[in-house]
Amino acid sequence: MQNKSLASSEAVISARNLGLVFPTADGSVEALKDVSLDINKGDFVSFIGPSGCGKTTFLRVMADLETPTSGEITVNGVSPEEARRARAYGYVFQAAGLYPWRTIGGNIRLPLEIMGYSRAEQAERVSRVLDLVELSGFEKKFPWQLSGGMQQRASIARALAFDADILLMDEPFGALDEIVRDHLNEQLLELWKRTEKTIAFVTHSIPEAVYLSTKIVVMSPRPGRITDVIESPLPRDRPLDIRDTPEFLEVAHRVREGLRAGHAYD
Image (tube, rainbow, N blue to C red; front, side, top):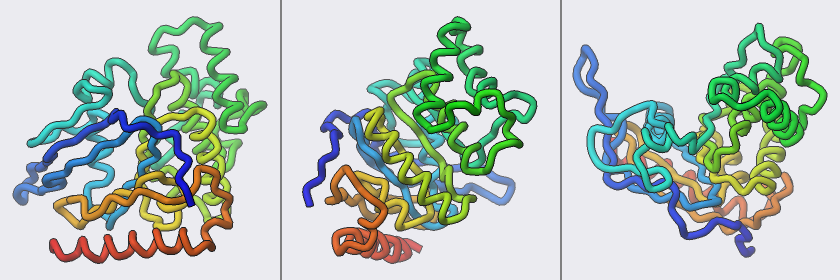
């Protein structure tokens, strides 16, 4: 199959020999070591590896939530700090993180209020992103009135509200049951196709990584290294039953092999 991704060769996130060491009371912990990677404009890149391998740490470095101790990283050609100040990305955490005392619309408006958007602009953006995540009509509901999957969609809407070109997602569907997760995977792919954003996505699920991604980054146990980067041969349009095809299973097998190879670093 031919990959029909609209991703270009323009790197929007670029890491070179990145390392990060955390000081602790019991000694230093090396979370990342010699990580080099380019994420191109329009890519959907999934990071997969065992717990504690540095997937989330790497995402947090991109977002300027952690500071590397060695190497270099740029986001849109500038430092992560400058990219954060320029509002270059939206971030979706593992938990929806919605404020229970604010409505869904109020939660989505919050970053827009902080950024100083006018009320009219806030209303237009809230309406638009709720439509993108298929939550139109739920603006006045409170988080506790929504299912876990709907709350995660609201969290994605909040990250999309200020229209950043990059979306960083830290295992957003990990706590959901398989049926809901499959549905949200389909919706996320459709959202990606409609917006053409660059997405960096952390997951522990091999099927999820293969189904969603144009590129799969396999990481080793701590210290986190990249053991394989797999360019997906799957087409951009991916029904769920593509997971039963030989092409899909071949990519999934390569991911498993990369995860096994990672243990050679132990």
